[in-house]
Image (cartoon, rainbow, N blue to C red; front, top):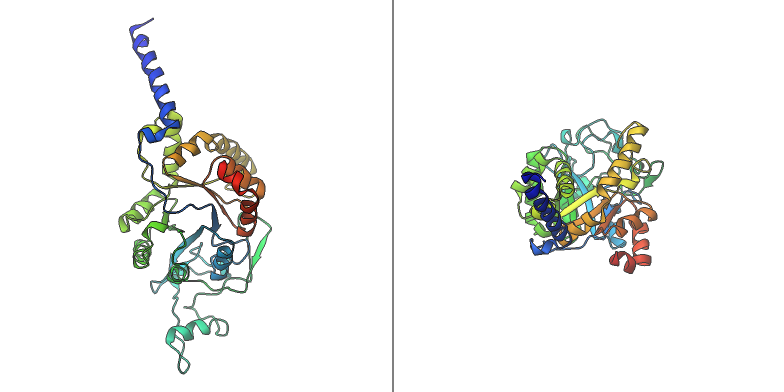
Length: 345
């Protein structure tokens, strides 16, 4: 045996043994995050399968099902109001080819006697014609993105301010996703979170690390989730055996469940790529040892966006903290019927 192998093999063996030990018992090296809440039931876009997405009616419906987390996306209007909207362009949601940032939230109507300007504005929504500067109503029905061919309806078609959501649900945990590098939007969200004393129960979420960096700078007291690049880095560390030795600043790992690809989630236009993505991501992500390691370190794992009972079962059997769904009633029914088993998973 060469001198190199003589020393390298024992060193490699020791590294592997230590990596396995600390993967299974990470608290020997790290103090876990202490969760401020436990999001077993998350309502995607406020619960977009049962009511029109991102409306107050959808959120009220989700809260009636005892949702633990509301997942929201935010945009900024031209007059500087943070509104809850998944899309920047309103074509899909409202049929109006305008960006949220090119429209005002507050519209100047002549106030009726004994009414404030704001109450007049909100009361006039259903009856006033849509002006070029007014945020339009949502369509009467919207397709549920993660349930193709299914449509949601609702009586409430108004876009809502994030401030109003915070006022209506003051102690409900929420995930606020910022999609673009709009620093004014980020600072407005951070300011609202501070104003309503929600630092511990409002999660920063973004796909982009460059956006997340600005979010953390704007309000470092808020917990934050993994971005795409950080999630890739996490998987790389896991497969190299280095994850047990590396600090994790994120408190939430929000990830799609690979089994929904090519069924309810189609990330690519080519079916062959979707099939490949389903196989590869299932092999990479669906590792119970990874999920358990994150959970033991206080990193809560939430799989999205699951709308079928079979997927709920898979997620909880992997050891996930919770599930994000468009159908909170279905997930609540599952948890009520399988709650003890789901918690034990």
